[in-house]
Length: 384
Length: 186
View (cartoon, each protein chain N blue to C red):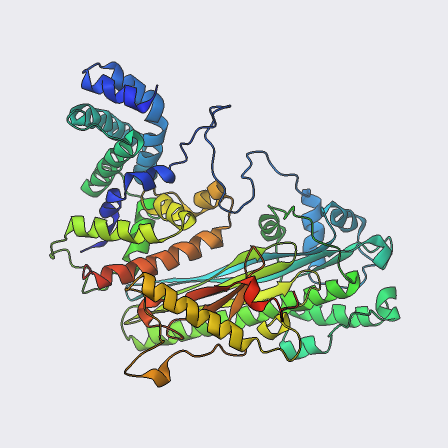
């Protein structure tokens, strides 16, 4: 079989599926074609209100600096923050460049992105001249630890003196330059769902900056490692090599921002790996699995038991599905519990979704697998 | 005019059937042809062939879904024209991109033009796979590999990010690969 066979076989896709995707459902009132949105948001043909070109020029200058308070923000940038529809933290994943490689024996596509954050706080939190925070760039985890923020913001921070200058210097050194065009594309669709007011506007903003910078740095390291490994394999000429390194936002609600990093490598066999990052938008803090639960609570047992129950149900419903449980020949290798730091994300409905990479809980033929944990399972122990 | 009435015109051998077909589905078929061929002259010839094929095919056919019936005729004609070299091939054209993506999981051993392909089995496997996915995934897959839309077009059409489209399609290709391997088709 060759590629054309596959392409031509697509003509055999069921008529109902072809029509489902055709977009030919007519609006009975207007007679116009209606596109069904898959994002939950209306797909409007009306151009959304967007900040003007001067905002992006100001933003490009602003991205190299962050501040707890922004007393010196230019009037243009200040007014741009006022254009943000609601108070709170906004996150956008901006692809700033891509690595591409194509030869007879290999091909690769890897995106390098920055998680940009903008935080709009009330004037009462920070003063009339300081509408918010904007940041883009990366920071090592150990550097971020120096700037851990408690719920209370110090008087100095609130006044914008001392610590703010130090913070600006740190992030100025680490931040990537982002063009206004890149930011424009990222903010082309504002999240118009109103978030709840931040517990503490300034602390939340700082946390949002730190979280997005940490995540950006981790992704950068993952991408660098994936490309390095790919190039080594290519140089060793060990057969056809493929690399895909992509990321996307999967949840962006008033409470949660979650993104996914997807890495696919193929040599003799293909292997995919998925990692998720979650930020609590109200506090701006990055969230690990244990952070979702009250201190000392046993979250591993109920989650693991629920997953095993779902595995059994899926296997019973479909004999072709296989998980590593209830095996007779090798029970010691069966899945029994999640890891303390098991990969997860929060879906659009606020539910916890546990994720397993290939070979973690099932044969490779199953690929990456996910399990939604019902709220009732975690209600006694989950904080948010 | 409703589809069943258009089909009735074909059965009555009333040439108004063609005009009504063009009125209802001309733009739809044109988009499919243009996505594959990209050259206006070739697109027009493909469309003319589509209307002729429809006239010759109905009857005996009485398609339940006229849009899919016509869309598939156009698609097959366009791909044939592309392969036959009558179309001017451009680097980076949509069909090449789709072919490259679908070729992701064809190993050199399976990418063998000499080996006969069980076309029906392949189609059944693809449909069986599409039966198992969500509507969102299915729409993205069909827009990309049936209609040959670009990633940016698909993203704009459904109000989602381009990265979302890319990752979804990549994961679907991987899953389809496993299905085809299990069926012994690759």
